[in-house]
Image (cartoon, rainbow, N blue to C red; front, side, top):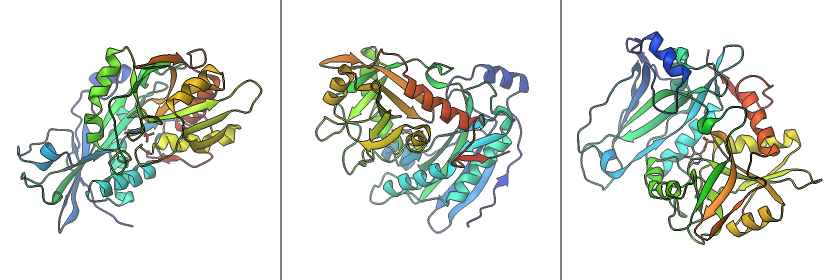
Length: 369
Ligand SMILES: *Cc1c(COP(=O)(O)O)cnc(C)c1O
């Protein structure tokens, strides 16, 4: 067990309480930030040090700081929930800690002991607990990240120093959320690739996002909400949505429901929500498995009524039904284009656990305060 002492640099609320309440009434996503942040430094020889909980504020960097040029950066995303009894909890933070370290290894960045990572999250969520909203579906989004801070443009070795930081942002339910989320229209990206074998697709790194923006713009121009990425080698197999994993539901009349998500091939992100749904589904009588599906199969099985629903899942949006698919060679509707019963059943169960309305059979809930 590694312990690191965090200095509590004079905590002070920088946002007046009435302003905070106004923000919490309509938080949006990722636009407002809380009063504090956690920072920690790493350098060759000293390892992790200088851990602080401090007022939220700007950084000053030399223009030659390596992250600005070579993108050695990674991040995580998870939420603090206000449960029904008032408690503030995290959902499986140790899985985010493990994924943070998997991303760090791929990016030749230092790993962080899982208990130190979780401690940083707990400290910030507890300090800024008044920022955890209470309306159903809302939460406090936590964004840990790490950047390379060495000064210089040489590129012969990884940075010798890094900055870790956690910031927090109150969040409304993404895509409208509410009791009945809106079904998305998605765009098949047939010209751009997000990740290739041997690349960084399985790591949660900013570079994957920067490279995806041109495809996002293409999707928006076609009236679509999100991009669906295909495998880079054959451009045949559906991978994920570049911020959310995908599930395909087979629940034709009379047959037991089954959900399938693309196998982790190294080019898609191993989502915590994805993993949680694979575990949760069988407890609800829904068979769950990993596999693969081509765009042609997706279209044909939808038309035949075998594939009855598709949904995306991730921490930010929880679960977002997919109603329509479009691509350069046309499109199709899934089911009746509206959120389906299997999607809604799983969503209700997952949200119920996160908000403390249902039992937590897997002990996924991590109480903060
Ligand atoms: C974060 C992320 C997801 C979803 O992961 P969760 O842990 O469920 O939030 C899916 N795809 C990509 C590319 C991501 O960055």
